[in-house]
Image 1 (cartoon, rainbow, N blue to C red):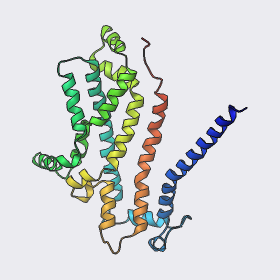
Image 2: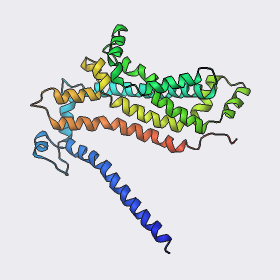
Image 3: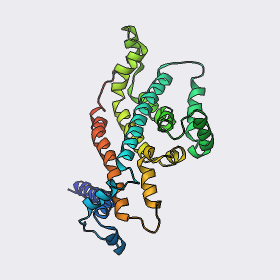
Image 4: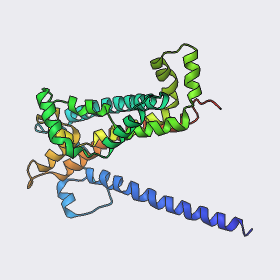
Length: 281
């Protein structure tokens, strides 16, 4: 009995801690939803835990604002985030597979070079990047927000670590003996095994691209090509004295809906794909 009581107490403490952490995480989403249902005048009165009745009015005000292309901004963010997540995860996995499955003289140098890029902040190369895309005629377009995602050192390192723990090289050798081409081996054998890692990084890449403000603010100028973070910033700074807080909270609420949908769609692969594939040595 004495040995069971500490375990029971430990379980209670763990559940209490998890409940507190869950409350802390969900509380801010609840406040966001509540504020999106209140008018600007109600929000100026202070905090309230009870929702209001102005959600539809706030949505109409945002959607009908001629200076604020909400639906176009959401479409732009979906295009940029979806394409960025797709090419980032695929080519990062392909690069990780190339460095993992092949032995060549410059293998360690290539790995070190990619890791060196990982510690280089985006702001350091911002001016050179801006000058490059301007000379290439891609300024004020969505392409500079998508194409650089093909090279992501952080995603590459995650994929490389996952391959080290989940992909036996004997499986690759068996596919080669059976006459499978390298791209066929990667697309039909390696990618299904990497499905959990791809799902995780696809979520992170999508969210990171969706919330990215620095690069779009640097290269996008016309409103019809702006993404959601820039539109929210323009809504807040359009008229500092007359901005509508209800519209801002409503737009933020609308902006997080696609992120939640993407997570719900991809999260099942994280668990379902854990036991995929593998060969016992």
